[in-house]
Image (tube, rainbow, N blue to C red; front, side):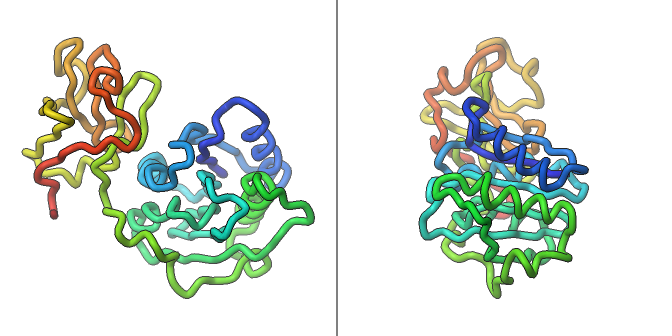
Length: 251
């Protein structure tokens, strides 16, 4: 299976063109769009989100991950292998958290292959998709023709915490996902945004309509929501808004 994770959105030609390249290069593989609205231009927030949305998918897969505001610049194109899961994308921190959270010994390569035609601004279609399709067909067998191994993981992101006490995604209901794995929070942890201390619940019906609370969402992240309301609007939250989480376990 090939999965995509991008900030392209559903409008315009971008997802369609990239998917067409993936299907042409690996016609026997399913191509699934996990996200098309990752935090735009924000590899840091998207990195925590990418790890969360992929966590339930245990089978072998190839992920094309593109949140790439530096496309065409100095950042390197890379391949990451975590067990049976392959990732293709930019070296801008987007793959940092999956490399940490998915266990084992991550393996990194710099993509050295280049197509005959390489747009300066659309590496998702012209570079990452063809590489991902070949990995989906051949696995590690053809990687020497695509990339050179890196002796160490990409540098520059070691100061990113394992869990991020910020809003990393807001869905269409106004629910605000945090970059914190629920299992890393102490049982008696409190979550505050501004002067508001949030109730803790298991699901929406645990609180009254219009009440804000924090719960473990379906991807294992802490999420701020309002029962039958819009948490982002009601609490004034946006991507990057910091929250105060007291007593994260292990901290």
